[in-house]
Length: 489
Image (tube, rainbow, N blue to C red; front, side, top):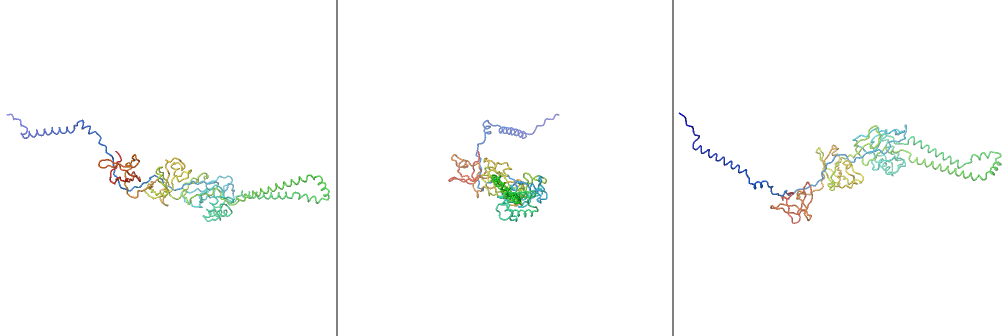
C-alpha cells in the first residue's frame, strides 16, 4: 500500500512563510528608495556650501617683537699681520753682533708663530733669520725703520710703548733721540736679543765721511796759504833781490790773475769742506741704535689671540704671516635690510648654540657703523656689499658681543640669534596681521562677526610680532577679547 506524501508544515507555519516574504520585499523596496534621487536632489547634493568668513578669536596677550637670524660664533676683530720691511739690516755682516741677514742672503722664518697663543704687548711674535719680530700696541702702522733723527706719530707710539713696558725713554715728544736708543737696547736685552746697533758698513761709512772732512779742512788751509813754500826758497837765495825784482818787472800784469786764482781755489776749498761737514752731520743724525721696519708690529688691541698662521719655519716672510683676533668671543650674523632698520647698538640679544647653550649678549656693531670704504669682516665673509654701497636692500651684517669666557668652546659653531626690538609692556588686544586692512579713508580696520553679520571696526595698529599685531579700538568703536575677526573668506 503506497504512502501519501507528507505536507510541509501546518497552517500556522504557512502563514509565517508568507509574512517573511512580504517583509523581505518591503525591505528591498526601502533600500532601493534610499538609493534613488530626483535630478533636483542630485544637483542640490553637489552644490558647494554657502561661503562663510574664516574667523579667529581676538586675544589679550603680551607681544614681543624680535629679529631672528642665523649666525656664527668666533673671535672678534680679525686682522692680518704683515711685516713692514726687512728684519735686521740688509747689509749686516758676520761678526757685527746684530745677527742680521746680510750679503744678499734671503731672510727665512727661523721660529714660526704658534696658533692659539695669547699675545701680550712686548711679546715676540716670531723669529726671522734669528732676529725677533716684537708686538707693540698702537694705531699707526710700522712702515719704516725708526732711528736717531726720525720723528712722527710712529716714534711717539714707540716711546709710549717703551714707557708702558718699563723702559722709560723720557719725554714722548715724537722725535727719536739717544735716550730712545738706550731704552730700545734695554728692551731688546730683556728679550734675549741685541738691538740693531750700527753695522760694519755703517761704521765704515762714518769713517769715510770723517776722512772726507779732514781732507777738506787740509785743502782749505792750503788754499788760505798758497805761497808758503816758495817764500822760504826765495829768501835763502843770495841773488834773490835782483831776480825778484826782475821777475816782478816781467810779470807785473800777471799778479792780478794769480790773485783771482787763489780766491777761486779758496772758495772751492770752503765749499768742499761745507759739503763734507753736511754729509757727516746728516749721517751722524741717523747713526745709532735703530728699530728695523720688520722687527716691530703695531696692533690696535692687545692682548690678542693668534688665530691662524700663514708663515712656516723656512719660509720667506712675504705677505701676511698670521691672523690675530681679539680674545673676546663675538657672534656674526646677517639680517635682512628691513629688519636691520629696527636695530641699533646696545640692544640685548639672546644667542643659542647648536648644543643648546644660551647666552645673553649685546649688539655692538652694524654694517652702517663701518667706514664707507671698509666693509666689515662679516660682510666680506657673507659677500655683502661694503658700507659705501647704494643698495639699501642688501642684507646687513650684525655683530653681537658676549660676556668674557662665554662660548669660547663654541668658536666656529653656528648659533641662533634673537634680538628683541620691542614689547607691548603688558597684555594688549591682538589679532592676526591678516585681519588688519586699510579702508578708503586710509584708516586701519578689522571686520568683526556679530549676530551673524560682519561689521567694520576702526582700530589703531601697534606693535607687530609673531604674525600678531596690537590693535586699539578707535574712539566709540568696540572690540574685546573673544570677538571673532575675519581673516579670510
